Structures are given as C-alpha cells and as structure tokens.
Length: 248
Figure: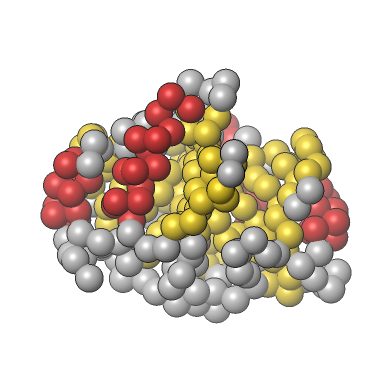
C-alpha cells in the first residue's frame, strides 16, 4: 500500500456552538458510544468511543458556519497524500503541523489527512427493543455539475472496491471493506454546495426510527429501503435496511 493511500476513514459531525451540546448528546445516545474527553486548544474536539473496535466517529464545535460533515483520511504520510490529492484536483487549506492537513475536494468537501493508526471495525449495538444498528456509511450529496469530477477524485484518492447502481441510477458506492465506514456519492440536482450526512444500518428499520425519534430526531421522508431523518444539532441521517452491499 502506498504511503498516500488511506487505511481508515473517520467521519466528523461539526456543529456550531449553539447546536453542539444537542448534537453531541443525540449522537452519543444514537450510537451507544461513550464520549471521550474533550481535546484541542479550545476543547472543541471529542471522539465517540465504541464498546468494541476502534473509533470512527468524532464531533467538533465550530467557531462559525453551519452544521456539516467532514472526513478524516488516515494515511501513513499526510504530505505525500496531500500532493496526490492536489494532483487530482484538491486544494490545501491549512497545514497545522504534526501530520494534520486540511484540504478541500474539487466540489468543496472538506477533509483532513491524519496519521492516527486505527483499524478494528466495531460491532453493531444490540438495543433493548430487540434490534441492532450501527453507523455504516457517509453519503456526499454533490451538485450535479461537479458530480463526474468528484466521483473520479474520490475513486482515485481512496482506492478500494467501488460499484455503480447501473442503468439510469448515477449513485456510486465505495464498500467499507476493512474500514468501519463506506462512502456513497449521489448527485444533487438543486443544491449548489456539497454536503454530507450519515447512514445508520439496522435489521429493523421501524424499531430504529422509533428509537431515534424518542431521542429527538424527526422523520422527513420514508422510502423503499430507507427513512430520512433530521437529528438534533441539524445533521441529517438516513436509516437503512441491511442489504445492498451494506454490512453492520
């Protein structure tokens, strides 16, 4: 494996200060993970620690800006990885030293290059209601005008096994493989900026939706195979039936 090739993917839920506590409380309860001690110069970062396996979900309190998702790509050599990303069309935003670089994809998705070594995929959480669930995927909603270039970028940068739905369905997915998270890209017809949300896979979608509703999430749409919800803190999520290549 190249020193620039990611070996783990972490998703960050970034909240403005006014939404941080509500957002963090929800995702701690929704995932069943423990909240780590806060860290950073302003104690703005924390991790969600699963009971098994390694962490792959984190939270951040923003100085400004709306709720969003950003990605951490774990690599052996962040500077080599940054050069590779730039050659594929990304932009370097900041170099904070200590192997921590902030970049922006061609469509504008923020991601960081970090060196922390992680690799053990957590097991799903069994809930008292009799079902299980786990956050298994990040979905990027990409403005349609940027979609082909964004797909090429992530395929080239991440590697791994990618699959398209085929036919008239333009969605493409990188299977999680040895990671805790897969990555789904889909074109957004109306949106002018890229955005991200999380997917929660479960063996009992009605029970999981009911559980998340009790935690404060609101159902926005019900589809064949998934339910769209909005969580406290302003982050959207989809609750997915197991299948279609997704694993818990």
